[in-house]
Length: 247
Image (cartoon, rainbow, N blue to C red):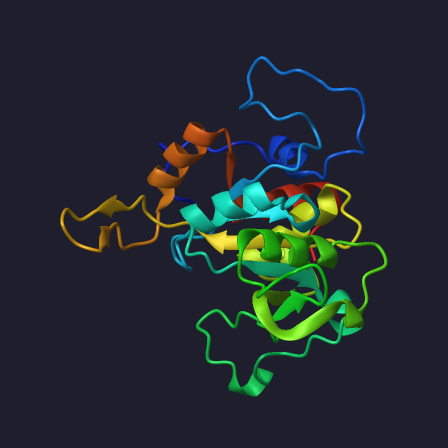
């Protein structure tokens, strides 16, 4: 099992599952003295790193049901802005979301299973704003969601996770669905986007510096700054194997 570095300290998987979990139904307010310590079921982001021998990137991941417009805006600002909704194959079939290209024609290096893109059919404008993408993603997480709830093409990119999750494929798609499943999400849908370097203004030009993906050390620093749990897919796979067995 590849590791990132012995001097990097990651969060444990159970605490990340608790942070990720969908918030419970509204109840009397609970006041926190430290807003960077989410309650179990807080619907927070988790920052997930894959192997340095794979993409060597970190993705912000959140339950689709927890993606408020404000969280969508944060996600868009700190990532590539290309929001993808990871979901199980069975749900993709139910919603009539065929692959973007045939499997035999998929030349993506990691065989990421993109489907056709979608927007919510109602209560959105063009579909691209943080509010609109929040609406689309939250709709995917709905208990009674159906194919007719979406228009095609759109601005959210569904991804089909392989059966077997991270035990079968160590990708961010499977990690998102795994976190959703482990936290008790109804449809096991997670939203993911690749985190990028903090950008800086280029004086006197309509340009910004910071052109690369964020790597492990910077991901951990980012997570600490915003109170986001940072974990690896390797650790998630081990947790699932330890608690549910190997495939």
